[in-house]
Amino acid sequence: MAKGDNIVRLVHMGKTFHTDSGDVKALDDINLDIKEGSIQGIIGLSGAGKSTLVRCINYLEVPTSGQVLFEGQSLGDMTDAEVREARKKMGMIFQQFNLLDQRNLLKNVTFPLEISGISGKIAKDRAMELLRLVGLEDRVKNYPAQLSGGQKQRVAIARALATNPKVLLCDEATSALDPKTTAQILDLLKKINKELGVTVIVITHQMSVIEAICDSVAIIDHSHIAESGPVSEIFANPKTDIGRKLILGNGDINETPITFGDSTKKKIRIVFDGLSAYKPVISEMTLACKVPVNILFANTREVEGKAVGQMVVELPDDHTEADQITGYLRDNEITFEEVR
Image 1: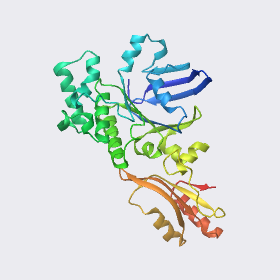
Image 2: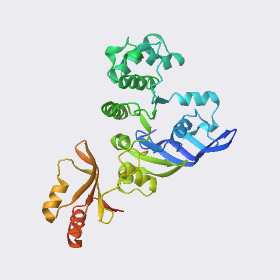
Image 3: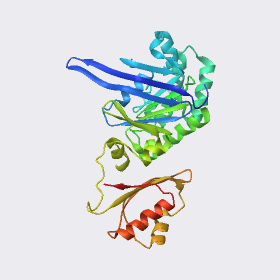
């Protein structure tokens, strides 16, 4: 399969749970294509269905309707043995690490190989290779209880890669970590994607995670995909209420949207989607227009020398001065929109 082909396709997929109190529709008519070699984000509120979706991808949960296609083959048409073989190509990591406390790091990583019938020197060499990749080759004899949360997640990533998967499923993999450790784990996932060519699927409720590493994002709301597409496009022009809440919030989809300043004044959201991080956009705009603006909110950061993020500013009451600012932004091809 060539990079850019769809390694995973969800076609009209649905999942209903049958309970004593009635049916619960966790997913409804999900359609999503995930490209080989990409990093795909899936984000939504708690209970929106995102964790069920990722478990349907590897058939830990069997959909009640539609299809899951992996490398062009429908998992629903496979035998149980064929599904198990396909699942070996899909590693998975979790929020709570799920390591085996009675095994040291080396034996935690060799565990999936042993289940697959590979043991001895081959399994040990593979485990050591992966522990070097995640930066823990000097801790092979340690046990999970002796590790920090970030180190535990590195071991979990190494274990998930043991069988040479083509897809790595990450279910809230950074939710239990502090911001600094989260950034380190996300950098590691980007490295794995780039160097090993593994497709990464990230389930999260944090937009900051999506912005940091994902190529594309699907926003799930009430069991449906509300919108999906390249991260830069969704960020620049969210089309749904849940998308706008996500973008205009503080990066966490479960938080209340921010209320910006005086409700009677006109405000705009300036989107930084690839400008040089060293270009002082606001300073240059203020100097060129000779008009001050009130910055109400900013959420920007540097990614590979580019500015990514957004800023909400309050425009002057004078219409001529406000038009000068918006005209400057248009002339310099800087994306912005009015915030209501």
